[in-house]
Length: 337
Ligand code: DAH
Image (cartoon, rainbow, N blue to C red):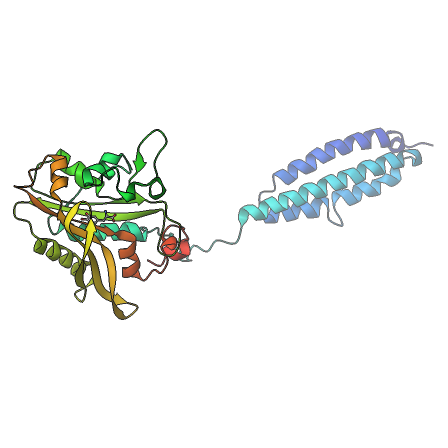
């Protein structure tokens, strides 16, 4: 005699496994936390779970249908195990480590000003207390501002292509901030007192003290009766305020086309604990030819000018031995300041 169960066994059971699979996966999806997941695992994959009892049901199948039933059951088992595994890893990823709300938070990473920007601000601060205002000029210049008006005629050796970045189609990158002296005087009437910090460019080979781009701060004071004493006093004041009361200053006769007389300024300051003379830049009394170029009457107006290297100032003040470090953007270096 054939039992009812045996007759319907295979078609009903194999198709009902599809149904069971849907039910199991649905249940898994709704297991929202660790405990629910574990319950689901016990109910479906556990040693007394649904899968085990479905396997046991195989006995009730006619022998010829058992392979098909077995295959479907194996597939079901694989599907459920894989689904369980993936949901469990999702779950632990989402939950992460237990949250301790009493933990102090991580400090917010604080950015900081680049040491050169800070040096420029400090320089501006000192000079503005002496009545200087800040003027700006373009980095892409023409030869009138970079040379001609500064009393550097066509034949001047500093105009060689090898010493300048000339641009295709005309113009050049300025090699000195002295260009701003001319721009300011062309646009305003004396008396005036300005400084102009900014970038300049020269085709130098990079080493510890040279870079093809660096910063200068230009100074210009024009008035009636300005003398070399005013120039020295201004630079002296700057040095003492910026570097400290022990700073000392000396001037060595030199030559610049745009000043007469001209001098090189050195500062005596502590370098690694020892007092040393350090070159700061150039200066002098504005050459009458420069006044003529901008339409000032050299009989009426007098002035002094100076140009200092900002990297050199920063390197001395903060003990930085290599100019390249200022431009490499290595956060480990920059963070120290
Ligand atoms: N422009 C000069 C340079 O780049 C520096 C300089 C010297 C500027 C004397 C001045 C000055 O204003 O009076 O080497």
